[in-house]
Length: 84
Image 1 (cartoon, rainbow, N blue to C red):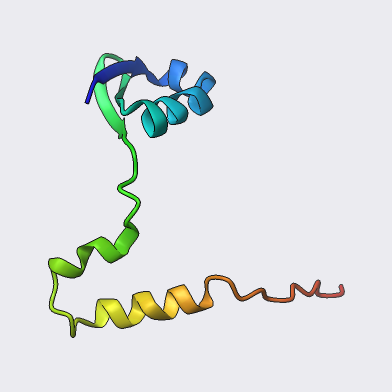
Image 2: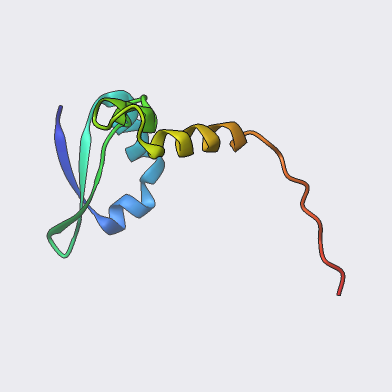
């Protein structure tokens, strides 16, 4: 995996390009501010939060919460404007 450093100003103006380079080009991008690293842009593993299942006990409350969030994730809620 190739690591590239880029300034914050450049990252702001080229964000879409950088995301594509990371996602499809396998690069890892270190974003710097005044010459010091402040963030890293790297590809997602594709496994999401479920990847931590091997780290915690299967009975951990975290997984109950995660399953509940996944169930509610695609439920649409009607947004109602309050009248003044």
